[in-house]
Image (cartoon, rainbow, N blue to C red; front, side, top):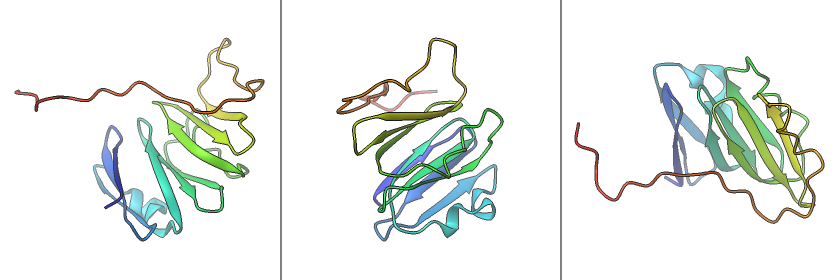
Length: 130
């Protein structure tokens, strides 16, 4: 296993051979995630998954109500990120491309010379006791 990501209703696993499998409340395998090949990174939004191929193209599967899976024309991508309803990618030329839900002041189209994007992550030191 290379990486594990969690959506609201499922989990996806990137295998070391570049394939992806999923399980959970929604059948993302039937939606095509199990057909992905040459994947080097994955990300998860609320109800969708995004994959970065070794050739710099991007694939996505799941809920696309806000356009968050509209990544078919993306190329030359080196990193991907997903939020609840927004997908963001950093291209090899250090520009940013975004699709999905965006507020008026969430325009990244003119961002250039971006070396890295980071989104907040929460890491637990100890398991939660419920």
